[in-house]
Image 1 (cartoon, rainbow, N blue to C red):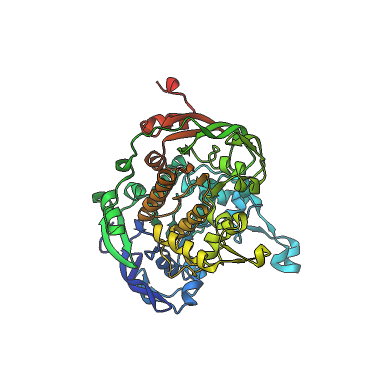
Image 2 (image 1 turned 90 degrees about the vertical axis):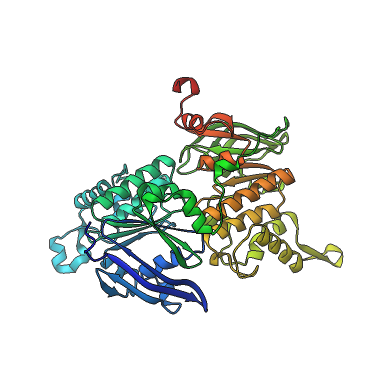
Length: 534
């Protein structure tokens, strides 16, 4: 690539403030054609704001615009809306999906750009009488999927897809736009299994080879080293450093991101602990009917005070297990807590039995987005356990104890280092990592005997991840709470857990001590026994 060619994208002295509070300060970088740029930083570092500016999002215009300049091919641009960015060849795939569930992959890929057949009626009634050219639609969708280089069935309904295929559909939709020159991917692998993530990283290399530039935002730093040409590290709204991806390391990036040394997962292993013989949770022949998950026949015993991990590839059933037990999806089988059978399909019965659940779906299940942090943390305990309430007239009237609510919220803000303006701030205004910490605080406030935590670090940065895992470990070790953690990241499970159960094709394929080499867990994940592998 000639150094003399003008950069495709250039940002000069870009800055942004919200209500007098600076969130971006003097950001400068360039991106050339076909270059893959990794953008990393802790949650709240300014990555999303920077991309919102690039993409002409309303949230920027409605809050006083931005300072500095954006240049495409050396010419300054000012995008009034995302449509302007699209016309300039910039596509963006967000963390939250925007697909129509009742439509196929192909229909979503060409949504609002469907090829049409004209007919005699079109002459009379205009374009409304045109019909969709299904053959061309199918061909264009397949072309985009092929360009991306992933396996995706164009006829599959989005509602029936595993989460990884939804991600591929979103990306295929962007690259099906013929003018696409730059693709922004915001945490694209956060919801993918390791295998799907590998496919996506290959796809990014394919796009780069075809001259499409990519800005790749991820918290999985190994992926940055695998596919990027250069890395920009952001902290507190500034670019701290620009690195050559071939010459940096995970440790260096993590240190720059957080401004401190971050111990790697493997160096923070726990010594093997003596686990109680007492079985606290017994699961027999559990099946769960959850879209995108396979839970056919799970048998599992969890011991008192244990920190048990559940791992496995995407869609194999690991996420379905807590969702089924907690009554969020139809399920069957037998689940007992301390020898007492729990009624399946009854969430309240689980909560009354002192089981709490931190869902992987923090926006859909986990948070009251329009409410304050106080209300988010205290409300479940108030509703289920009558906590944080004052009795009046001998208990005839109960009223919320505002002092106790503030006290418990401040306690967890401090303990989990939640970045917020105050306990009164609305949950929707927090970054993803801090929202996740609120979900944990809410569960901790219930003081459960057994805690299910599903994907607790999905989509959060290195520093926040370490804090969340540390909080869970302390909760388990110091308070003796039994924890069952479901995670797609094996190293994370090995760092925290006593034992790890692997789910393959809807059943437990094996349970091993966390200190077992990772390749042995890999063998279980692909559905082979140790003997077969040897």
